[in-house]
Length: 109
Image (tube, rainbow, N blue to C red; front, side):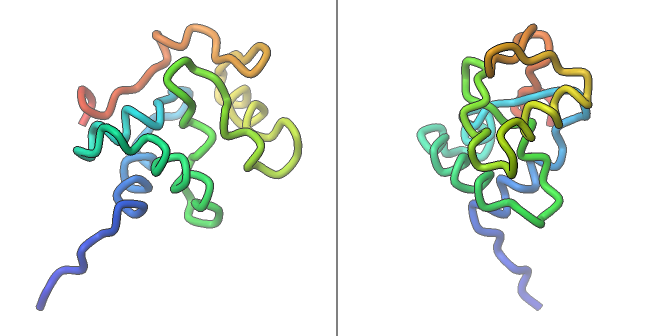
């Protein structure tokens, strides 16, 4: 029996589900981990389409720690609220202590 080959979005979701509570990563870090370093935007598209898949998309931000995907969440501040519920401080759409909270799948997995 042949194993189902995962598409890129499914692979992104698998990685995103491993981001620890209270930590964040970037679209580019996930893309690089998956061997598609220039596909950060595709990771963003995957996060945008992850609704209902039990994926913590709120933990994926841009390479500078900005909540660039916040407009894809219901409500104006849901992404920030979800992060703050996990103890992540956000000021002006910017993760505070980004380097300390950054989870790099290439190093962690």
